[in-house]
Image (cartoon, rainbow, N blue to C red; front, side, top):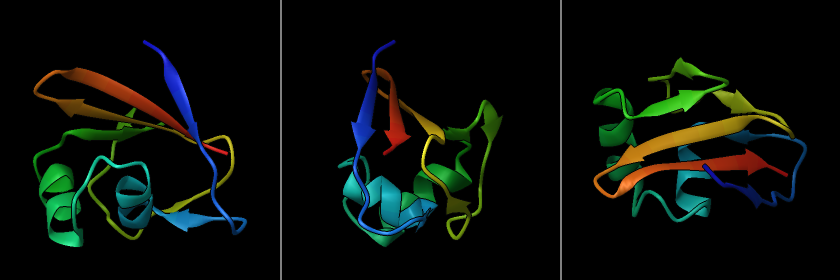
Amino acid sequence: MHTQDVPVDEAGIRLGQFLKLAGVAESGAHARELLAEGEVTVGGEVEQRRGRQLSPGDVVVVSLPGGEQAFRVA
């Protein structure tokens, strides 16, 4: 699986915001849905908190109908 780097302006970003920035979630409500359904992992562990703080280097994997996509906080 290819990991796509997603640049962020600040030192950290919340998971819900990151999902929108990466183009995976269309809105905060969509991000909340993905998390509630267990479709998102951070560092290999299922994450359901939209407010989880991410740091540069964290890898977020999202399970979508077309397969899994991986994104790295850059």
